[in-house]
Image 1 (cartoon, helix red, strand yellow):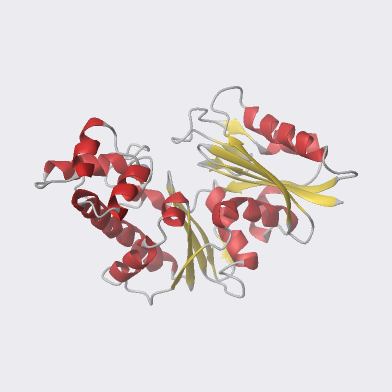
Image 2: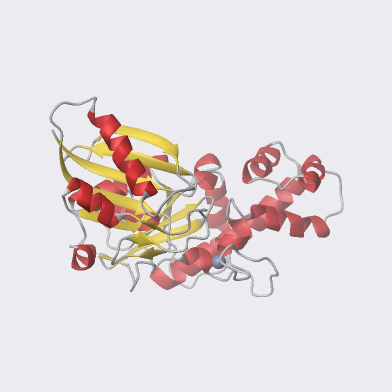
Length: 321
Ligand SMILES: [Zn+2]
């Protein structure tokens, strides 16, 4: 059987999957992303997982390898450079994987992979202007305009998480900037927003009490919000405004026909999407696109990586052929 090896490297989880040439998922393993080791430890982990998967099948022939990874990237080298969201800040992917498998190997930002999955067989099928936005431990986007996949000089043309959504905010993003969308609204940084909103809050709330003693996680916030907790509802209403401002900037800049949303925050709390949609109107000049939640769920990046490997977009072939 011919297969494509696809991987999604997240800050906390790594997914490695095999797809057949019809882009059907054949096998998948989810594991913790290595946080320590040498420059090639993540590539070595992908190879090790592949070698374990191979034992379940007879006569596998790998025809291509695709990886979607947290950034930022040096896309020419297929390396991640100085990522703020992972302890192992820089690591090499493309060369060790290509050397091992000896087949065409492509490495892109995870959201670039995701938007390509949407474009090839998801919400963007038959459309030329497609955006994928992830609301997760980080915030990012992948963008296709006029049928062109946007990459940028280093492969980082879509760092929308660092759009400024609050110019006078004192909340610092993990990248060092202030007032960034990701710094205020991502799963990793939400506790900073909670801490700030606590200062002005007067009222009784269990979530208010809980968030005093521990850094409030995104999971806790949404848990209390769903129970009707007043302070949690206040935080979520502010969070929705921040997300609406970020999404509106994406619409104003890229003019998409559809935005597909993914990432744990939106997948676990899909009701947020309508709330964001209702507020976005206040901030946009462009006609509103359709809002959908990705049909690929948690697997959107591995699907995208598989499509990138089997039908590489011309923009990428020019750089990584
Ligand atoms: Zn930032």
